[in-house]
Amino acid sequence: MGSLRLGGANPLFLIAGPCVIESEVHARKMAEQVARVAGDAGMPFIFKASYDKANRSSAKGFRGPGLKEGLRILGKIKADLELPILTDIHEASHAAEVAEVCDVLQIPAFLSRQTDLLVAASKTGRVVNVKKGQFLSPWDMSNVVEKIAGAGNTQIVVTERGASFGYQNLVVDVRAFPILRKLGYPVVFDVTHAVQLPGGRATQAEASRNLSSRWRARAWQPAWMEFFWRRTIIRRLRFPMGRMHCRSRNWRGYWRG
Image (tube, rainbow, N blue to C red; front, side, top):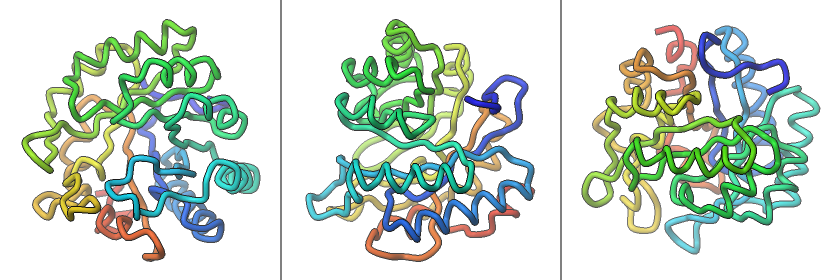
């Protein structure tokens, strides 16, 4: 991806940013601050933000600015801060337009088996980060990556974000990491969604209070992964889930132990 090389013997990588674009000012401020801290830690960084979260628990949930305005904001952050950009797509028809701006197209976990979406992302030629569905085993992901590779693109990243364990609960099985590595592509650990309780507050997700994302990242970093994924929040604005997804704000301590 440009001058960046992902996986293998390359440095541990970070994907971070707000769950959704709340405003241009907020997204830019977050990108600037995380880039500064990542640079101090010597950690390569991809900025992530969504232009539309189409899978909210409730129809009242804030979804973002939409495709056109969201891509304008992401494109400006990319140009001004010289950062690689990742965003997720929910519709195959968005893939080509998003690929004109973003360096990585992400497939949401709930949509990880949607063939048309995977093929459309693949055909853009961009890096495709596909999140393992909460309903899939790690070996089930072989079919997912084959759909992407079969469409002509082997620039693939696979993200572990937990598996459904009963109602409104996710568990990350550390044994999944070496299985995913055997697929032959870099593996990401989404440390914040791994503590999510889907629908835990009826109309929105909640964060588990038992084990923070910071401690999960520290415990599992040696377990065959090349990336960390971390949701970030500077202040609470219109989007209420941000505060629940990021309890620790000590970024330097998070990386340096």
